[in-house]
Length: 390
Image (cartoon, rainbow, N blue to C red):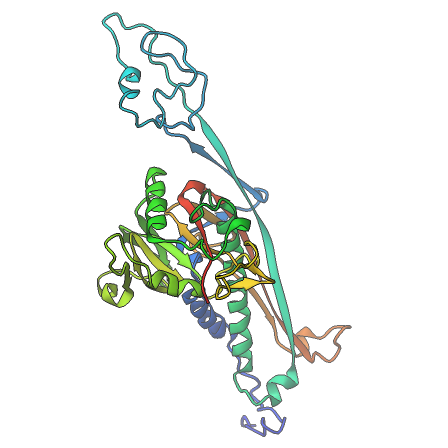
């Protein structure tokens, strides 16, 4: 008997059966989701091997000439025991360094002994997931012929968005270089007078220089085949859309506009998702779902009525700078370059029928993944706080 089209619109399916290639839908949705990643484009995923527990540990060795290199091995050029075996540490004092240079006399001897130290970095990861169900009739009778494709897309986009939110929270809470404008030292002190300025950004940039933060950023690019590219001579500064007027209106030290729109340089460089322009030594990326501390500032005072506020207190917005190689995310059974989502799709039918659904009328789509965060160089992540006008 020939295969018959019958009346699928009227509920009588074709004799050849349903033709739904979910793998195509999933791959297409993953490509679309990757294009919407903002923070995830900055870090590789450390792939945790099987049978090794759920905690990863890594040594970070402190440089010899660093105040953080604290040890009890120090012997100076005269043979005397000193407090720390890091010579002159992080000092920049030209009056101090010459006396601590490791000179060796004619007779040699036990002089200039130094020590080295390291710190243990640790990260953990957890499993996340959700699922949705649908009936056979929703595919047969729904007016949208691409319903299943849309469900796949929204599920994967949702998983990517959850991962981005988790990573954003980790970056905002784990950064070690913290800055406030003006005389504020905590979020609760901030008013409408505490807006970030060009000079504040310069000071933070100098601090990051002193923290040996590279002026380059490695980003993950590509669609099906994930690749990396390096953005030279720039650090990435993330802001929410509420801060666009603030950064676009900044003046440099000469009173000229400090902001350079992306269209003036995009042709000659690699751009990032959400990038809108450059300011001083930063590339500005707008994250539509950039978080804030709602109502964490001081009570709204006279003159500050036109500022973002919640329940009568100023909202505090972060400006996040992420230095290269400052963190890594942790995955499980990942390809080592991006998060790997595990998708299970069971379509309605005989194969899914059981005592809970003896007619096999309900199918489901589930998605799960592993996510974890490990801070590598917290001093390379800066969080600047500011209030913002409406």
